[in-house]
Length: 521
Image (cartoon, one colour):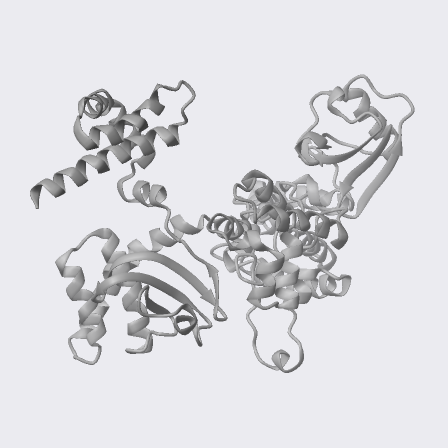
């Protein structure tokens, strides 16, 4: 058996085993003997039944017979070395995955001589409260180790992340506390921040793509530039371990073939989009393609489902729920601001929005008013570059999108005031091109507003009224009865699908409604 063994990002071995072990323990022994692995670890393998995604190896018979790829995940009792530092204390994350910053932060184990000094310092602190006079070499070793571990989570930590790390450091090693400091870790905070800034220079020289993308160049280097962190637009992870751009391209091409299908395989799309995340970020940030080119190469990205998934991959936060929670929290304040601005008479559009809201003050309309009014408040009366209304019977699509770089295009029918009465479509426009449209999920909206699943509620009510409805339909005579008879005959078939069943019921109700309207004229 030929094995490819991934120990860490920079340590990938090749091992040939003549006699296949009969148990996981036997395989572990082979790895320890031939690759010199120490400490506790578990194994994962690329499962061909799941498109070679990693799965925990629990039975030796699950391994492919001739060749297999294994990944070693060290547990917390492992001895720290240069090759295993990235797996010993923190959750192992493949490159490209986005994870939340651990809290509390698991402080890694330092070099053996530093650990001996820290143990002694902790004993002194426990005895009389004294703190250690830290030699320069010891402090450098501690900061280097922390910076290395932190950079594997994010090359651009936020202030709260630094605080989490130094707080965990002095809690585990109280002998390192700052003398006379209230918090005990202020000097460590600034030292670590400075150290990680220098460490990013090493990462840039080594070719870390995220740091290279965010590096200041040319004229930009003279001014201050905010370093984008993991939760911001310039998050650009390296390619997964053992993968190349050619491998990423092989995984991208099936997406182009799958998306045009009438019923695409969403599970396959989700897996491929997750696997190619790092390559996609490289292209977007490095090449900065036009929206038309981006849609051509990554069509799956322009769907509501994948936009939310991509947001989750970057910031580990649910897009819709976080946006709505924030909007609901800010809407009352925004509406009060609009009221104050409309009293001056300089922003009549805001007054029109507020007047419409007074006629029907619901939570959904308050959200709409807060969003529509924001562009008027920020940019005056000309909000056309942000939100545009398009009359289905009076405007052409090209005219509606002309000059629009980024914004919303709302298609409506009939008359409208500040709020369109009949919206039939909402589209996101980027560079005069529709990037996303049909942003209406009736089931999701119904459940979000009422907390009740629409389909479940509808089917429950339909089941309760079905006997009476079918009895009325079957006993109906005349022209309507003749129309219904051929449709009701389909219900006698055993294998009729639920969709057809619902359509027949709806059609029957419509026929009764039309008959009622004609009789009242």
